[in-house]
Length: 451
Image (tube, rainbow, N blue to C red; front, top):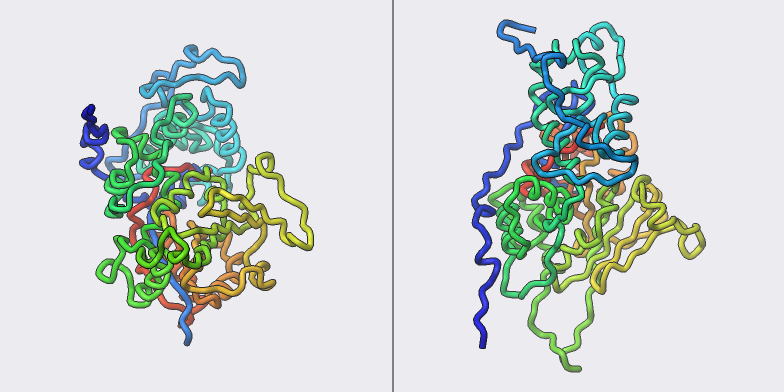
């Protein structure tokens, strides 16, 4: 007999000792700068009920600075993949060795406006043309305006630079061991939902000792883990931590389905039991979450091994950039809305509808609804945002009519407060708060650039 040593026990312990980054958000992040940053930070749930100054900092001008990156090192033909090293990930976006990054910079310059106060005072919006040498993101119309507004730009410059480097890391050509996800685990190994470190450890992920790698993996896993952290029986949200009495009733119904008793069933004829219907997760306004690798969503089945899932992505952008991968089927009497159906495994199915939810609701496509088996999820929907509120006005009453739980996330505390106030304004007295608004423990740790 040969002795074996668990490799997990030999992994460095830095993972469990890592300090989580702060979630402080700049007040300028969504107002002054078109190239802004955002994290999926706040979480809530609800369901219908029956009834310039002294000491100002001046930045060095570009003529005083050395070139941020020497592109003579990156002589490459268009389309050639360039391997970037971990210590050389910073490049100005408009001079990036990656064609897709240069295209994003061109899109920012084409659509975004300079945030300098002069343009708001004079009512003369001007497109962005100057790239900040510190963060590498196009941010102002000229170097002069960048220098004059440098004190404000510094509030988000570090976060923009971090996002820039993370985006280049994804295009660096390196091997990504953090994207290798664990499969099933033994029944006795319980999942710990205290934070990202304990979750990844108890789910037997490979040890992640690099902050950037941790940011990359949480960007994807934040979607399924946010849902699981709310409905799991070991959820960190309980009656003492933001969960309301009505919320406890709702999650108890879902947990009854997701955690069936292990007794009474067997492998012989006498132990046969009827398989319950799948738990349906309706993900409305789906965008990037609908294009995630399916093994990311499949993590749900490993945290609820005795249940089956049916994920329903709904929204006009739910198949964006996936036409070549999965062409939309023709609308026929058997498939009137042209749904794309994917069989991920024996315990997960995914359906995608390129349609507004209120249209599907009125036709009774998903009826009947059952709080024991159904839940709605809205990832940063912008319910109260002036640009999207009109699209949700006809959807919200129909969601509340289902009497099912609705889980909603937001990028910042400001976004979440605006959405909550909008719901109170439109449907006051018609819903119960299930989860008090607050920080999402399983938010993405990575900043994203809002082009």
